[in-house]
Picture (cartoon, rainbow, N blue to C red):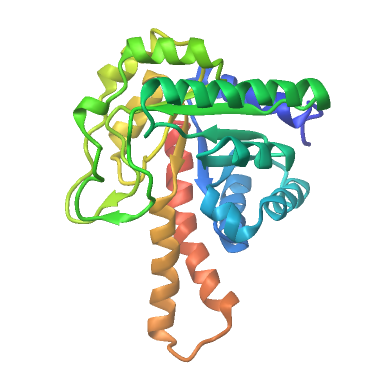
Length: 296
């Protein structure tokens, strides 16, 4: 039976509940319905809430309002809570677009901007979202990033330019940023990187730095760019206070590999649902492993 708590209130309540239990909620991005179904099938099987994310590019491909409609339908079909996040949004106008379309949360990403410009942009978005809540009664959670971890969900030969030790988030920056912006959730840079390295292991996460940040801020923390990180690092980050873990590159690769393997064996196949099904099955393996890890 689904909760009777309004979706917006249930979202933050669920995040805080998982955080208090030393668990994390899984966040997975989608580009199509095949991927959305793969995620929801596993979440339903495990009886866990899940966050579906769509970046600006993914929203542009699927459609901003269409994505909201799809997730609404999935929420009716599956007996779990499925939340919709406007992932990595780079302008005030795109934040407005997602909020007005009824998304449950939005990430305003000014991490590449100079610090004061990042604060200014995020604060502007937070003020707008608070006004939207007063006007409509709907709560939308706002997340922001500090410290640069790259921007592309891709397979990389080297670390993205600008991803350096000097760009890790400090506890002093974290405290100042959260207080001045008024965000609901915070994504620090602790060694995590968007995308995956193809010929080398991912950099280790700085768990000690994470613990310092946790001691200074009182909002839920989010780990972006977690594709390719070891189970040990992911579990240690959750134990230290991470409440949501984002995976995109790793499931994209699994989905693609499943389709390519099927087409390699069936080169004349043109029915999309047949090779799409194989993409789903490979993607489900990653989704299941992550979701099980996050609640151990």
